[in-house]
Amino acid sequence: MRKVIFIGAGNVSTSLASAFSNAGWSIVQVYSRTIDSAATLAKLYNSNAISNLSEIERFADLYIIAVPDSSISEIIDSIPIVNGVVVHTSGSTPLSVLSTLKSKGIGVFYPFQTFSRSRIVDLCNVPIFVEAGSDDVLNFLTAVGKELSHNVSYLNSEKRLLLHLSGVFASNFTNHILALTYRLATENGIDFKVLQPLVEETVVKAFTTNPKDVQTGPAIRNDIVTMEKHSAVLGNLDEQLQRIYNELSLSIQKLGKL
Amino acid sequence: MRKVIFIGAGNVSTSLASAFSNAGWSIVQVYSRTIDSAATLAKLYNSNAISNLSEIERFADLYIIAVPDSSISEIIDSIPIVNGVVVHTSGSTPLSVLSTLKSKGIGVFYPFQTFSRSRIVDLCNVPIFVEAGSDDVLNFLTAVGKELSHNVSYLNSEKRLLLHLSGVFASNFTNHILALTYRLATENGIDFKVLQPLVEETVVKAFTTNPKDVQTGPAIRNDIVTMEKHSAVLGNLDEQLQRIYNELSLSIQKLGKL
Image 1 (tube, helix red, strand yellow):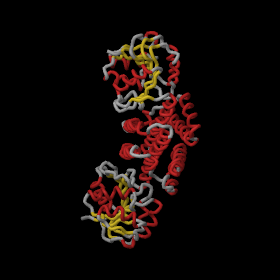
Image 2 (cartoon, each protein chain N blue to C red):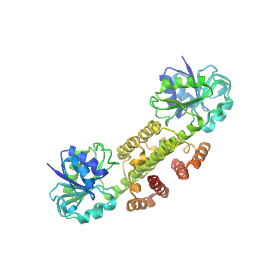
Image 3 (cartoon, rainbow over the protein chains, first blue to last red):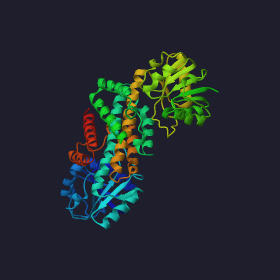
Image 4 (cartoon, rainbow over the protein chains, first blue to last red):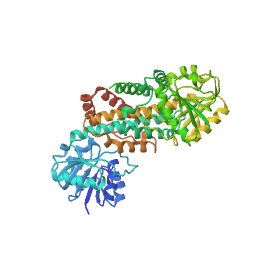
């Protein structure tokens, strides 16, 4: 049975561990700075929790670093010599940060999805982007990726950063727009759920074409009367919402002219 | 057979006409300022195209005004006395604009969805919000709504404006964020389609909870290094994108603290 070790027990590890386990891998260890976090994930897969990287087993096939980007270099400095492939899962961190590692190989294994601990994501349709320090490791990571998803491809560090940035817009900003909408709706006695068919249709439509071509709403129509009504309502409720409304309306009009 | 007349032949009329026709209504006339637009929609339903409101038939059951908000008052001034119920379909226009009309009844029939001419929307799950000048007309419009959708409810003009504003955030702004993403991705050789599973997961997750509670990404983690990398990339590409990135990142952090 192939062995994988998770370094980090957060959102990404939670979904990846499920996918690796389903694909027949043994999750031999889960590391986290706090042993309780490691134990929460480890116990789901009959795995060992550790909170000290010196305890890491040296002969796993794959070591997956899935920690906040800001902690990656600290983790790398603490990993002993291991006899397997070490990857990180970060969109915005180049492969080169791993180059000081003494391991069988280094790489990047980037599942392009938004992960939360409370919700395990099926990786089957999730694009996985790989990069590696050698062709052998690249082939290995591609094969591993294909066990989890039918969409695995190579992407270099520079393009991965641009993809990550695109993901921040498409996912983090979309989620935030919805979080602002949630507040606007619920604080005014409107059930947020009523917006679901609208948002679903918006997303389906956006991916049938260039979303620019199906823009609707007052800004693209230059319907100044409606925009002024909206702005007046927002001015009474929340100045930051009003600023975002004005900035995005302006941006809709500008993109519409391109 | 009950008769409906569409005043306006754009995005909203296109989807509503399909729904009314499926529900067994006869679409007797379609009005548009330009006869070609009226004819395009009319010919789908064996209906008459008109471009002069004086030609409107006086004995339809329902007259649906579906024109840009800025044209509603002009339309109202040109409608002759008719012996049916006249409604508008606008989220941001109060019922009271119809009060000068000499008709059997006035009301609002607001399907809460984003409509494009190129894509007919099934109204079955779309919330329809009604308002009327009398209880009789309200009951009539509620019954008509239920022929098209299983989600029909009353909403007054003031709350409808707030709902419409919520819809602008959830749909128009989300679509625009995706349009900006499309540009960012495709201009850098990234296939926009690769973002679809990410956006779909984001939306599904947002509606299982308060989206604020599942915010991911560098801003909510206060990951300054990643945000600076992103900002640097954007600074080289597009200053307006960079401004939107900074404004929305700030807003994510602010909402996260509430």
